[in-house]
Length: 255
Image (cartoon, rainbow, N blue to C red; front, side, top):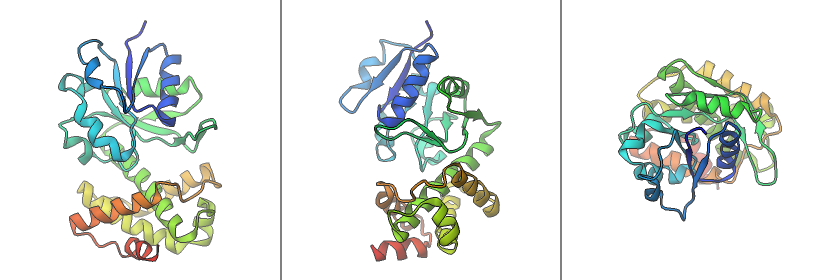
């Protein structure tokens, strides 16, 4: 029997990972909102602790992880950046940028292969492969940062632009009918990502990566239910760091 894996947050995506780990022979311990993770600290020795909470609950979850587990933690949230885990003294955790979705009552839908990096990345890629979800391992932290910024650019651009063009619009509409808006929103998002990471990124390379993800599911709706909250978080961060995001503010003012 392989060592157990703890999953913090068993929502739709958490359930996908649980199935993958079980198929790979790992017992799975789920931690829900009602459960107390502290009860497991001394009773099990997990191979991996995968934090599958939503973005808004990430800080609370990371704050509960004991020091002697921190070398085995993996994260998979949207809007994730190194600043999020450094604040809780995690050094080089395993991270996966998830490019598949799972909605209630539907099977998983893959857009593109999900990149992952860190000490436990092989467990993630091997386990997901057993349920036909492609994932691949990156070579270094620089590649990981690019992939995180790319996912943030995709999710924030599509969601926030979707607020402007309507709930029925999909990414194919955004690319072909609202290209100027797409680029203005992504420009603001990238300025903010640059500030939050202290790194600069190739705009053209990121746009090409975003378009590739579009092509993975051209009918993918732009505006998810989290879109208003994503816009609010982006504007709060822009204000905190003194970043000008005129297009994001214009969209907020129009709602």
